[in-house]
Amino acid sequence: MLPKKILNKLVPLISTIAFSASVQADDPVTPAIPGVSAGGVVIELIKDGFNGTEGPVGLVDGSLLFTETNAKRIVRIGPDNTVSTYLENTNGANGLGVNAKGELIAVQVANPRVGVIYPQGQEKNLAENFEGQPFQRPNDLVLAGNGSLYFTDSGTRPTKENPNPPASKPGLFHIAPDGTLKRIANDIERPNGVQLSPDEKVLYVTNTLGEHVLAYDIAADGSVQNRRNFAKLEGWKNTENVWSSGADGLAVDAEGRVYVASNAGIEVFSNKGEALGVISLPKKPQNLAFAGKDKKTLYVVGRGAAYKIPLLAAGFAGRAK
Image (cartoon, rainbow, N blue to C red; front, side, top):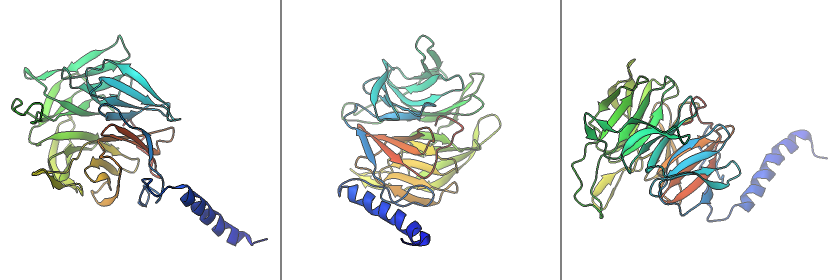
């Protein structure tokens, strides 16, 4: 019989070889990022073909919700990968959050507004215009522990279907616990994802057209100050004569690391903005969230697909996202 010291070295090696043999050559796998992901772990495609993929948020039962914005539907992915419809007729819900009462709050794009959309029968509008001007395209939100809410409006942009939209009025907004709405920034070209640090002292915002994730210090009244470039994005590139990072959704883990969906994939940064690595995906990601009982599974949605990535890191447990 082999000595115990040798057996202890052989067992993980044999497990690694067995796992590697089960991985197909074309399976997307994680890179080794210290403290974040083990190398060679398969990135699982749960399902493709969704009609608009946005707004993932984890629930306490270990499941995940995300929005099919174009289909005006919210989808639930169970811990066992079962896929089901959670809610229909969502007014084009995009970003999602869950408050202390367990209510589901969404920014909505069909008839632009922010409000409670679930439980049914208890829907409530929180904001639908600013200074009499309707929102254009509310995009993402994050809820603070005191009940306040931050959300972005990415404004308008030309598309093939609508080459001459109204003038764009993007903004970053704050709704205080008493319901007071304030625009706290209007100098971001296309504000998109928004997220809080675990201690809620810093607010992160992605600018889809910019090269950096932005960071702000949060004041006692919920306003922001000291705008700065937090992290430089590898996804910054020129596509069809437009420079863009493609920066979209954001997530944070228990250690304060920041995860960003961009043109490059999922870019991971330390809480100081240091680049730690990139998790590449078959399709460009749009948004992401930690879920599962231990919050060690990162779910990523984008371009009609939903993926599941087992990680070493755990998501921040202090809020749904």
